[in-house]
Image (cartoon, rainbow over the protein chains, first blue to last red):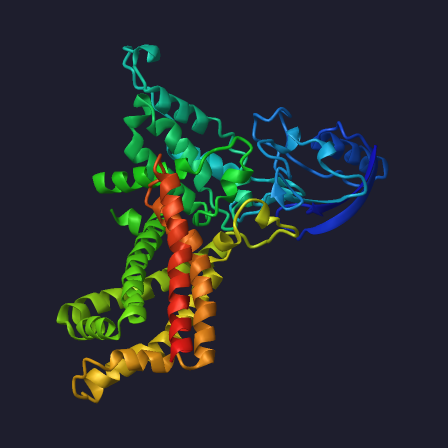
Length: 249
Length: 219
């Protein structure tokens, strides 16, 4: 069992100022997930009459993209290719002080404590992250369309992005380019998506800029911290797509 | 087309292309400087050509100055914009866990290089403009080598060169390979590109440092 000190960002709501608050926690099992540890802390806080720490979570199996904590200076903590819910307490040492903050970016305003509003990502998706299905009743079986295996694999890899926002949180510029490029790539590589590729990349990049995300300076932090290992190759593809789309009009 | 002017991706392209242009200039400057180590006459001849050829003087030089100013202004504008995308900084941020120091501090290595360029202009460019166009002194094809060696006699100036080129190395180590990514080149050749840009980023600044030290020690 481990005894830890947690330094957690507490902020009552979007309009009030927040601050770091220190909470000791005892008897933490190394086999707990990070969110289970947070549950234990919240039970203790409730028993003491203190407002529990608000944090986002849903599936707790690394696929929904809801959990979003910046732990000891890294999005989703020190482990690689995992979300916060998949991070285990065995990654920390007994007696350690753990700093927990929300994903920070002006485009991700804090709702409460560690929960942030990531609806900017939804609006970017709405701007073009889809394939219109105008079939007129003549839908062709997708399996009848031959697709190069390499393209299919790359499209699938891009599609594994869960939109958690770790890329934005990790980027020193709070840039969303890894997320947007994954969504652009996932469709641009497939014949069904190519039809709307021009409008898609132009509209999604415009929405990304309108939301107030920063510019990409290729530090590569997003790729390292991404729980799904989305590659920087996607950003290069988006850069190409955008250039060609602009020339094409 | 109007959207591209204001877009974040246009700023990426602009930084990358102006940076690549400056890398090409850096290489030709290095080659010319390197001749000074081997032959005073060759260095004088090339310098005289560069200083008096109308194409170089009135077309390439203004383009170069524009490229330098554009890259610096764009870099500073980008940095300010990027800082404004996160008003509340992290209490603890472990940047070294996921990115290189060079990539996170391009603005500081860039400002160091900008400071060096001011010194470089005071040392060479302004006196050259004064010699040719203000005082209109007589053409002397043999003056360049001696003028340069005279500058490198000062140990403080040589020290400033060494520090500046070290920061240029740090700037290139991220910026050169990064510019290919920015214009959309990330494919099976990327590894080879990165090896080339890494070697270039080390060899060229060290070469410039070597030339400055060579003339200081042999003056």
